[in-house]
Length: 119
Image (tube, rainbow, N blue to C red; front, top):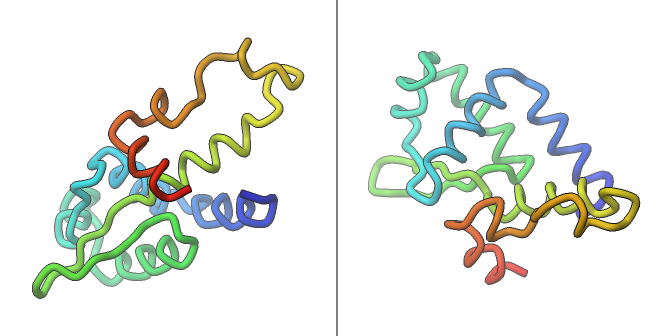
């Protein structure tokens, strides 16, 4: 992760709607959700949702997979882990062991295996 990547992520998440979508998808974990489920959960019109999903996909915050005639959206959990690692890289004066555990396994146990496979 570099500074420009982090800025792109934060710019995308600066929209309250996109932040809500991203947090919802993080909550769903690897199961993700189809667009209709996201729209119903957040009470969003499908046209608005489509715009925000495209922006999140462009920022690589979410992944999309075709399932028959539906698209399933999932949070890019390894990217979330990388962002947290970037933000906490020099935590506590360069002594991260005094800050607590920011490892992938501690932050997101269900995605730590996926994260190590990506690296």
